[in-house]
Length: 148
Image (cartoon, rainbow, N blue to C red; front, side):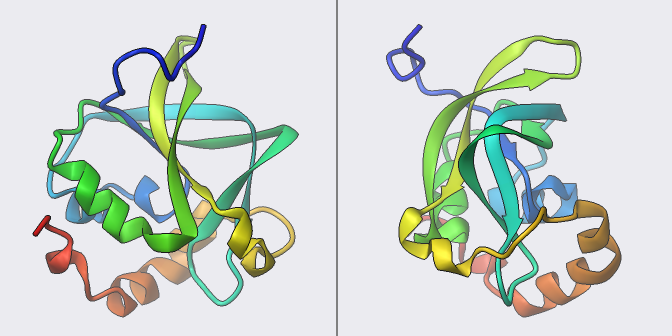
């Protein structure tokens, strides 16, 4: 099935700072229902000098994250601005915890910025313990994410 031929999904697969519901709702401008999900064929790396990760296509790897469901159209420009030039939005198929497959948008790290990716896997639990407060303090642009 050509997943790009169907109507665009209203779901977003997140794998970094946006896995945190408070951060996601501040960015998207709405609280959305969510569940755990897994994306095969990708790997999540720390971004050097940042609290957040970048995800790239890598055969044989898998990324566990959070799938936010039924996001309104107003959320997408906000998410695009938040992710910025380092990422591009792509439609993928993710597996939910019950084995169901769902289509979703996700943000993939652009090849042009690959030198910024560190070795190993990014750790969400460590982000919550050690990085979230710094990330939220450093990112003062939540209120500026609305569309012009």
